[in-house]
Image (cartoon, rainbow, N blue to C red):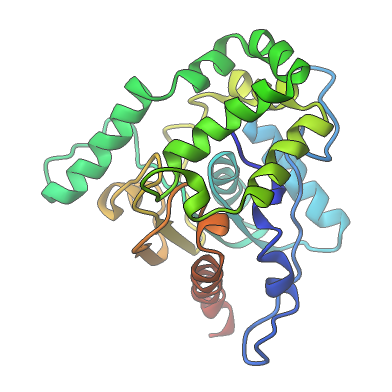
Length: 279
């Protein structure tokens, strides 16, 4: 929810054509999920995160990349995890800000701070995720309202930016109004309020408990994100962690909240992923 390619407009160019001549450059492919942004709206059911991951492998192959690295957060983090777990032959590695452990894992060996992270994630889903339950069970109901009212669409997304950012009073402390309106406008102008909601119905709680990721993995946890998982839990699923970082600041939208720090972290994660390829 509330995610789109508009979150990355301030970092894509710098990744592809860095102003620092010493910085690495990357070929960047930034697709919109089916039903989001500039992608088509699915005309049938079945577009789960697993199917989207398969589509991304096909897409990258058609663009000439048989192997690639993937980054993602939120739904993109789920899909990135599936890419690393199901398609290791095509993945150089992954970098994610969403790295859940195995369901039912014991918290006994965690430190007090780590246990607080895990318990906060549980509290989020129990008490602060009404939007997700609505979209997972009745996506069309809220969808009609979202494509009918620009104020409704703005309120639905602004609520998330207000709560999920590393700010004290409002999200505009770190995110410009223009960037937030870019994000909301992409939903409104493309009329994707309903089609984007349906990914929740297709894929809510769909990450298979037995899925394991053995490709090189970089993980970054931001202190005000809605789900933070300590390394001790994450590495039960991601079994080849080459870099794990607890960022000093940032929330669910780090590329908008702190683009320079996010860019540096992403480069560091990609460097850690690519290093085994050079040895």
